[in-house]
Length: 221
Image (cartoon, rainbow, N blue to C red; front, side, top):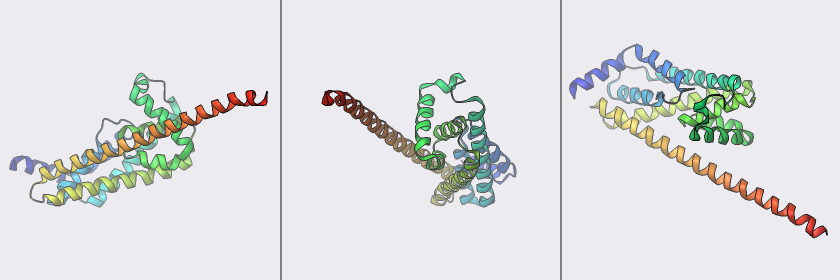
């Protein structure tokens, strides 16, 4: 265990950490399998246990990378749409795109800010925003705000975990990752619940409107 902890501390202290964080954050903006949250949370947790890493710089680099990645997703949506490739038509991805399309009409800014915390959701929202012609002048500052908030949130989780077990950076990193995964899962479930409730409400309103339109000719006669 001591060997593992020593290796982790050396990796976190390496100047390459900042470059890795930037690259991972950028790619994660348009390719969800890359775990940028995991890297940032783990690095912050270890830094809280051992020091040696400039957390403000790491957080800023992660925020910049996230904003760039989100804008790449926006540009991909603007250029190729949201239906061209096979992976875009997978059930979960297609459902996310459909939900994003409807939600953007109601609350574009709030959705772009909130979706940053959901790996698949943020890609779907940002690509859909580009595909639907959402204003880039509005999107760019929103992506910067979202990236900054996300980076601060992930760094904060890492700091909490690292301070819980100061003498064991590996355990601190693991606790931080688990906390991030649990919080992400809860956010995802809440968003799914709200989306389904909204869909049921919309369907109910459509049915009521259809029934009303069917009654009008009868009443008039």
